[in-house]
Length: 230
Image (cartoon, rainbow, N blue to C red; front, side, top):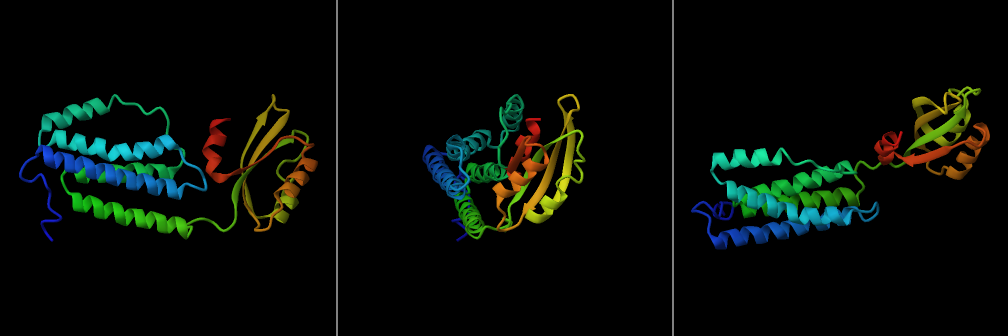
């Protein structure tokens, strides 16, 4: 049992052991990528990110194998990575965990610990699928962002109180700003809709209150995009 969990490069790196490690990196990368695709079927996924998850363990494993015990190489590679700039951030915080998932697998394989890498990947993959199947931490009701434009001559604080109390379990005014040279207020609410809420009916009532100006209803995961667009 101890031999299974020992590093295959303890006695030195050979072409055969390197090919084995690279092959295992690809297998685990594909496994992580498949888990990512399965857990993002409903919300949609980026094909390029799924491909990246396959490649990352291999890249990390090769880097660790090349560094070995050479401190000078480690510092030179660290310096090279400092000039890299990512052009886009992951859209979903969960995507960051998948990146660390692949990094951990690649690091373990780069050190030659195939059994540890496989065990870690399988356990975490099963936990991830389990949480997706049983919708762990997913709220029963929709938590959304309501963005309403209000004319300056109306009291934006009390204008929608009765409508929101009718259709939501909770609501909170999070942001107010003026637009169009102060002629309009743009309000942003965090709301938790009731289970059987008729969203169209709620929006129609809001439009009747704000003079048929702009009304937006967004899911909370689009919060960052909402504020970046302002």
